[in-house]
Length: 476
Image (cartoon, rainbow, N blue to C red):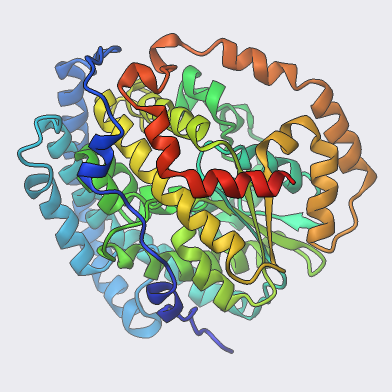
């Protein structure tokens, strides 16, 4: 039984880094006054969260103490689970809240405290979750033998429309299967089987699992089709719950956002550890899902934004297909900037809402930085390397002709498109005005133009001239 992990050498040498320097960003930004509304959460509510984190950490300490010996034994037998960060990674993220961002006044002290406690809590919980992983190794180790044939990776920029596309595809359960968000948050076969037995005895109301308002907030719901029982960006549950990156990088400002954000193209490989664990985690979760509820006829479908992992995935899965949705970069930058602000500030019950408020200036600079770097690397990967296994779908084609776009994707994947998919696409196309109406209902506080935050659109276009020309070639 082979348990070899994907080779990572290709990842370290196969990506051209493309982040912008601070001077390049400042050249695209004009000096304007940016009103910081809505205001940051009340300091009282923030300190309540800090107290809650402290209490939670204290309550978890006895559990961690009891689990540590067994977890240590498990690491000797099976090695470190990919969901558990390395010791060096823990140390780095524990120090980062006190060393990163200075003298950046935009980084609130409470953000630093919350980030530190979040990392500390993850460290305390790691022996327990490590044992949860080892239970699968003990009881269901045969999942390693499952073959992942011809997987489809949708690796696209955030705010490009890829989430809705993957939801259309995963409705075709005859041809595709995709890990649900809840399976990524709890990637343990034994918990899935236990949950299945419980629901057989005591049926539960799934509405609270399917309603994103309860964990994302009303404004975020308008912008993102998030469901725990559907697939979503695969690296975000991994980066937020398991590998520290996602939440922590939100707390500490633009520089740390570049350092820790899973989607960014780093100017130096300082967070290689994230990808060293992401690739084995992806491989294991795909095999676990296929082992638990898949069949050999289904193609594994994974959607994310981690373009840095694409070369390694292509190297490891030789028969894989890669798909991206490309959209006007200015529209993507604007949408991403507003989305960052929504997710960082909205609602006390949102997963990220209100935990780490960020100013518009940080959201603006991060949006420019990540989008500019991502666009260039996306063009390189999908246009200049092996092209027989890659397909770029235009966002405009996707929105105007969903049926034709799906036919093109099915043809690319060598799969016959069922009539039910065509009928569903036709119905969705005819009701697309609902999406337009939702955009019109956006809260203007979270719906700012590029110019309103000081972005010079012409200079941004000039920086992305090659990418814009590539989009024109795709249109032909």
